[in-house]
Length: 230
Length: 230
Image (tube, rainbow over all chains, first blue to last red; front, side, top):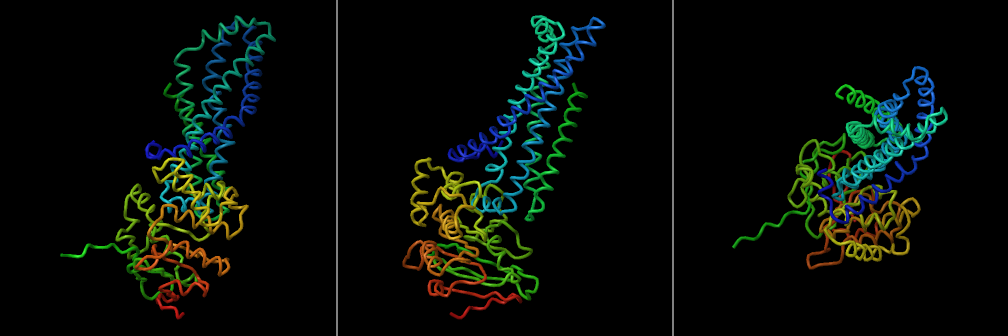
């Protein structure tokens, strides 16, 4: 945050441009993948659940399943895994390459803070992308759930009523908090591993691999922490 | 009446260099002089630029720029102070994902409070001075070695510094181009000598340039600093 406040107007414009590029790569280019994963996951889970819960007359629990299992838990988790897998590796490899080519030292020598030029825009881009993709994931999941229930004979009106009844403000805030936490992990962890590389090109794939593994572990631990505290 | 203290542009005090050196390295670069220290890789001459800029810390002794040990400053002060020194690192250190033009503009965008129009104007002047106006949109990988070196020099003098540190600035260039770049680096003449103080490190320097360099030293593996016979 301090790095952001110290930027000059022209520096802010450069950082914003890099951040927008990061969002384009991290969010826009991943919309298809997130839509596919969310749609299939929600359709499969809700199809099975509608059939099984219908046998015991508990189809109202579909709403809880959609909200708790998919929107609140799996949505942030899968979205974060997609972002970490696609963009976390890219961020780590890019910053590691900057380091190996001597670009980070050149920035420091010019009086430019590498955190301002390299880390801050990627961090901001990851946060924005995480939120945007999570909204896409949850919307698609709810719509795919509607498709699954309607194939099993439930009306759209009833489905959306069940989902809205099950959705509380707490679910929304928890989902937003998770997106924030996972966005921080995906922005910070790969940047750290990328910049930790010294001078050897052979360190680049190692840094990318360590970054994505550490980010995934961090995401799962954070997710468990939310459940434990929630 | 006392004479005001004029800070020394660059001084190295008792810095151990090279594995085989029997004595520490000390040198003072006088204002408005162009001084070159040449030596092979084992001599440790390649470390002098990064010591001067505070990018690396010597095991003992200190490097002073305008009587200030940059490496001893806190991070924000260190970055701000480095903008007073032009630096052309070995290998140029140009950012590969930026055009030559944007590489030249980068320090101005992050380190000056100038408006975008002022920065563009200054960059145009710089590119014209180094004869890159026609190829400013090329990325470093698309440019040849001479163009990259010209861009790196333009970037180094973007803030019009009074001190320039150049690492291997003429390697791979013809004597004519090297001579032209040295004149650009000197920034014109004043009553005391060149307008800028220049410190050059490298393995060799084209003989055509020797008459424009006030002091040329050869650093031996044993750490002895011997005046080079011109």
